[in-house]
Amino acid sequence: MIKPSHRDDSGNITLMALVTIIVVMCGFAIVMQFSKVVVEHNRVKNAVELTALAGATDLIQGPEISCSSSRRIAQSNRIVIEQCLATGADIRIRASSNVSIFGRNYVVREVARAGFE
Amino acid sequence: MVKKFSVGKRGGKLRFPSLHSSADSGYAVAEFAMVFPALVMVLFFGFWIVQVGLNEYSLQTEVTQIARAIARGDNSAPQIAEAAIHGVTFDITTQNNVTSVVGKRSIHCPAPLRGQSFELKAVAAAQNEGATSD
Image 1 (spheres, one colour):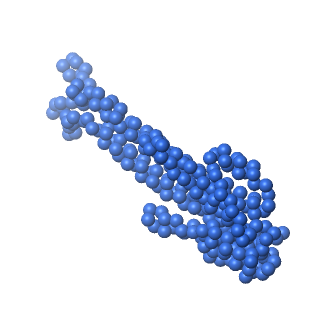
Image 2 (cartoon, chains in turn cyan, orange):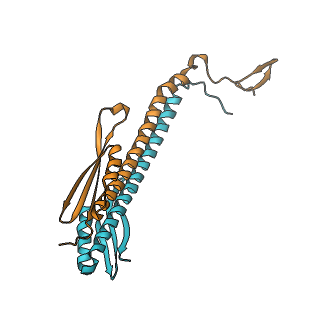
Image 3 (cartoon, chains in turn brown, cyan):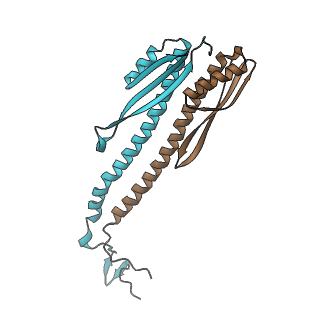
């Protein structure tokens, strides 16, 4: 037999609201961390494009110099070049950056290609 | 077995269950009135944080586009002017054929922390076109 409670139910809304606020705050914390990754992705994408363009400018001087100027621009844009492939008329750059998500390290990677037509 | 709070007709009188005594009526409304502003504030603050993220995203894009335009030798004045409308300031330097653009946007905190602000910053560097590395 289910007995209905005779107890005073004041405080129920407060408890429910507290739970809701905690859930909403946790949700926003997740959204915040997610937006941090999105912003970092955008930053790395823009930076790797500028890096590839810098490399393409110096392609005519050979792959060594081309990759060297790419590294210089990458450093200024606070990204790390993982791979630089300068072959003939184009240069392909793969770069990364680290972002901390809930205390854990997450690597953001982007690739860009630039060259002559 | 007679249930104390059963629903039905007993003794010719229709009874409905009453879980609330008159003593605690109005508590829910009062509590709701107290916690609702807190909930609204949390939501408002959350949306503000999302907006800050979007601002940072657009600031990065603007700074990159301006760095690229200057490095290419294009006229970047319209882009700078458009960004300035949204409260963005730029610091542009060219050194060793590398154009560096630093964009800053001041973000004001919402109501409880009104009057305080912090700065979003984005940096982009581009090699000038036509120039070759040293």
